[in-house]
Image (cartoon, rainbow, N blue to C red; front, side):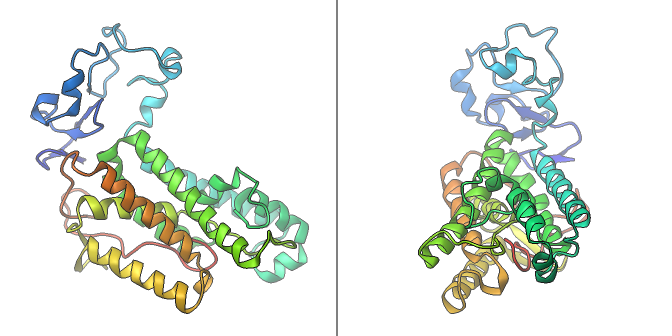
Length: 325
């Protein structure tokens, strides 16, 4: 069940505005009823409102200038139509599928459980493993790892914490900015967060390191913190319920986490606690900057809840333990 971005009403059959990407109830579904910027483009044959139904039979005036539209993918009833409004769940699914692939790879190559001992005993297997799943300072030219490392994780607790953050915060941001922009934010912030950590490692070493790549980064915490940063700008007073009980405003959670991260970097090091602290910070800064860029489009909720109308709840905080970000 979704909430109307204009009035906050819960709606079983929400309407999504084609232009601003917002979700609205029947009362506010029309552009003129929610102050849609698409009113300025009302003469556009493609229109600004998308009911979510397949109207390809009766709507022959749709703008088909894009390749995806010409192929029939980017229509409400097309292939990409199933992902519109659901990219949060798509990314969560990819994270868990990737994590399962990591475990299978480790089991087949003798790396499971992944420890220093198993890595030392199977160095070539680990080189192959890291070239697929881990962004390392040894091989920053492996461009695919800029993105595969975002979906890979270092353990069950790591992926579980990141999943909680992305599930609850991600849906709000995707509803606000739209699925396309949310996709760019997630992938871009995740990749840049990892690259930031790798760049610092290379700078500290004075050169690209050689040898077994055991000090790489992986995980979606950079993307998760970018999402958190966006929401902090859009609605700093958003109440997040820690441990299902303690209400904490999002701005306080963000400031507290940022302060702790900065302290760890200066007191212990950029990889304090075997965690990519710089990657966390880069992701958060990207989110704060992007949140400022999109601020003011329309209203966001004032409370983060577990489920629809079932009482308060929220994640206990971002990040993940050990060897990852």
